[in-house]
Length: 378
Image (cartoon, rainbow, N blue to C red; front, side, top):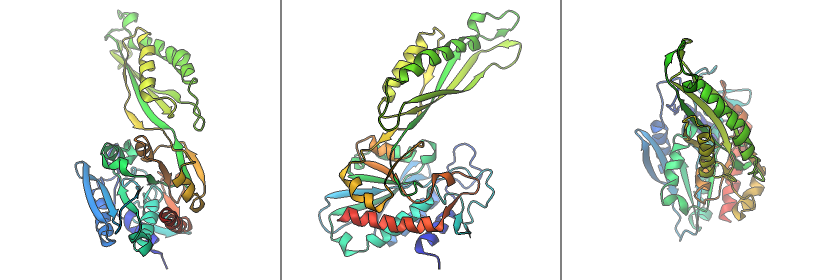
């Protein structure tokens, strides 16, 4: 017979909550419907629920489980409510299917599986006298927009409420290892101005493609070696890779403009502000008129694994780990809240065309979250 966690996961998968950015592969996008479902589920458990719109019809959800006494410790449990696109999937994304000991569907692994395990654990633990008469208060949050830059977590981190938490546990498929460190990601765009002209009379000094050549040499000879001066003891070096180059419209027209996109994977050792300053200086020295924009997609994170609360819950987990991806945890860590990513399932199943989670991993995740919560109450 299916467990409560299995049943809940199937309900969550059946609610489309696809991030609308890019090509979602469906017209059923946004986090409003799943937030409403979670609100009713959590109210029935006795939580005080609040929905806060970050963008139109795209809310963050918060559900606080009050205790009777004075609160001395606050813990945040927070998966994200959006999923990636369903374009190109080989299974029905919103019709959960159980086959071969696996539950299939978009979000099964990332991150509705961890969410379901977390929620059923909260339902079990917060109903106990140990919790209700204690001094530790749990809050569940479902952040919108994680898949395109951690929008919901960023908005929450800018509030006074965010800094009140003693620990943030972000629901992600980590094989129930505590991901305490990961790199950030920036897609820096360099724009070079040129002058459009007939190719037969064009001025090479105004050719944006030729000027971009000087920029590429500067990145290779100056910027990349400079990054080697800031090794992080856990995450290694900040890296940069120029990956997209676009310039020109026709073979007989000199280019009006050329653009370069650089993928930069950051660590906490090198502040983004300092990185941006040096890159601008290097670009200015090329004399190309280069313009730089650096929207931050994901922030780097390193939470000390020796933190007392992490050591306290460690026996209920599979230990510590680092990750090549980024998540909402970094937004809380950035403002001083100890934060980790934790949950059942593997990142290897996330974003795939036939996304799934092992039923045994899902139920083990529920049991482990229960143990984590009890250790936090002790």
